[in-house]
Length: 131
Image 1 (cartoon, rainbow, N blue to C red):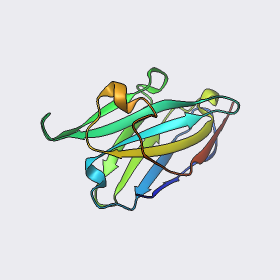
Image 2: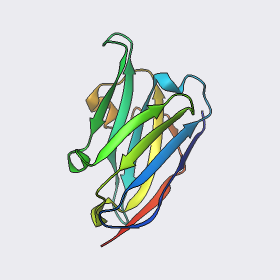
Image 3: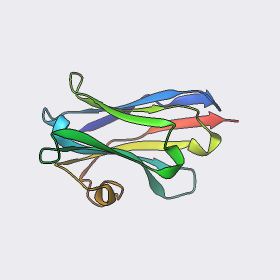
Image 4: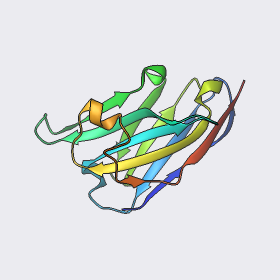
């Protein structure tokens, strides 16, 4: 599975950006997909994830890091075979390289928030927010 992250750029605080993660696999709609951010000089940390559950009502579940709740929205576009991250009210602290990662099947919130379960990673896209 190949993942391609795109949509990063240089914006000002308060602006919005939309990141996209495109996959080479047709069953991407059933994958757990996570976004992680790596700020300069820091470890990679969790931002948001989306996971599909067949047994939990045939729907997506979405998880967010506390610092992005109410500002970021993760969603799927099954026509384009992508998972998107809509980032609003951007802050300078949101600066970093954003990576998308994917793993087949459902994951709990604890699992989806960890890097360990993800076998497939995109190359990253740089988001720079100037204050």
